[in-house]
Figure 1 (cartoon, helix red, strand yellow):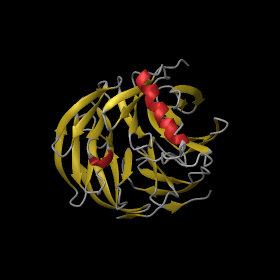
Figure 2 (cartoon, one colour):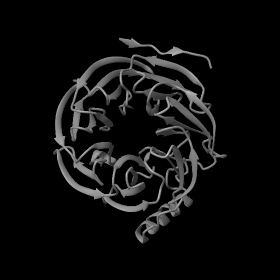
Figure 3 (cartoon, helix red, strand yellow):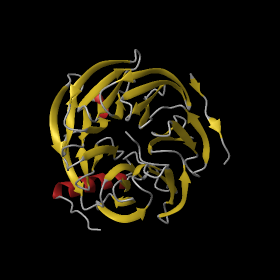
Length: 345
């Protein structure tokens, strides 16, 4: 059925390896030469949105002042969030609340709610924006919706293995890839037919999944171990494992189409991976406990990360790979968002 949304009123730091130093030096030389593709540094985000999944709320942070200015109740267990395709509305998925809240991404004002989106732990639009995928982490299923912006029509509920977690897509929007945390599997779903076309075994507790440029490889954060698994998805086989840190979990690309960060929850670190060489090129160490979701400013110089086990958000200077600020928020902070931001390519 059509789910029409109802509108409502208004520390210590890790060192940088020599290799990382030279990688970053070259990267920032590109930035100075204005050939990197990063947004104009004058377009700076002002408001950060952080989901407090353990408190059914959102923390709104004044980014220049690095201070929480408001806490907004949104619903039970908000875990992940993303923008609508028109880039005008922020969707906040309440996994235990069984709905999606709509928010103005620059003011933090709640503008509506989409009811009856059941167990939306992780959400995502396909690249062609025709499909909306909601992973039911609690119910062991994936719901596929025909999408027109925030108007969603359920096409099919697909039963999978235990604990569907994160999602990635092929560029042509033909396939959606789902990690299954407690089945230790990766599944591929054909979006046109809404059927599971294959599954393969992964390492223990697969979570974040990221497609490298050109749809070449899938990177899977193996949270139950200490590595990122590189998968040749076309042939359903492992290529290699990139050892990053215990609890390798989620990804955020730098925005240069070459590097991607992965958060290591248990080792309290973030690693940088070169997606062309499939090698780790640096680490940010000594973070407060539980680094999880990440976002990057449009100039590519500052990384914000939720610290899931610390009730904090960290602000990291990318050129020096150092933590420069910590902001207290609510319990179990998960998703983080601001706009404008660095490209997700």
